[in-house]
Amino acid sequence: MLLTYRALKRRSHTKKLRITTPNGIDESSYVRIGGIDQWISIRGEDLSNPVILEVHGGPGASNLVFTPRTRAWERHFTIVRWDMRGAGRTFAAGGPAGQGEMTLDRLYRDALEVTHHIRGRLGVSRLLLVANSFGTVTGLRLARNHPELYSAYVGTDQNILGGGRDTSSYEALLARLEKAGKKKELAKVSAMGPDRTAWSAHEWSEHAKIVVTTDPLTYDTLKTVVIRSLWFSPFHSLRGLRAYLKGMTFSEQLGPQAMSIDEYAEGTTFRLPFFLFQGDSDVLTPPEPAHRFYEEVTAPVKDFALIRDASHFASFRHPDQFLDLMLSKVRPVVTGEAVGR
Image (cartoon, rainbow, N blue to C red; front, side):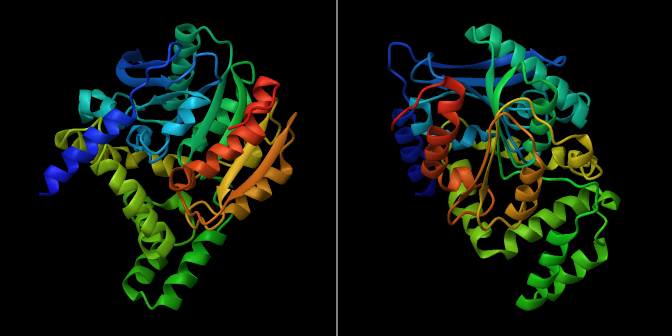
């Protein structure tokens, strides 16, 4: 019965996702990036719209599963969803042995290759860079270093790494666990200590899991948005879902590599429009550090907004709110004209 319902939902999603407009695009394939085959999807109803390059989070958590939830975005933007090495269909194609170098520097170089590939494929000079969660680590570096390639930067579920100095979210987690009487989780987090630069990949992953599963709103989002999107994805067979989850576990090795990054030291000057849209109740990447960083940013245009009733995965829990922000704040800046819904 469960598999029958899954099949019906997947069929319904497939029908909903059809693009039939004359100037639309719906193509996906493996592209040779960084020496390995990486999966790239391009979808949109009008190729004259701004082109978004998404940099997904996780690490290893492809955004392809959220396509049915973000279908309305494709009326106003052409969306490029790229499964990074270690993620989604890229991981499924090559397995652990076929992912090559798993470093943040390699992901950064891959992202630049993908950028140039898309510019050539679609004949556009600049892409609108949209990064979420762990992808914002790479996203900020791309935005700082290559304003000539991107029309604007949009970060959501924005990570702000302070070289290990900011322990406020760690302390908030300890307080929340103590108040809730979750002694087992409290002991685990206490044993890790506040210095994230000293955490192993397992500790980094365990911390994220504890944050997600002990906050009611985040846990609800995980169940109703993330897991449902995975289960009903029209792009993934049951074998594909297993590969998706294995890719996330495989990619955990990237987590500790980011913990020593200091975003302030890397630079708060951006030579392109800069936007942060954060969940108002995010406990994994809280809005307060993101806003503090935003206050220090110098950019030609900048804006900060909260997505209401949202924890982590804010843009996918409330894709309508995120689209409103993109249309009211971002699209006019990158196109030079106001656009209605």
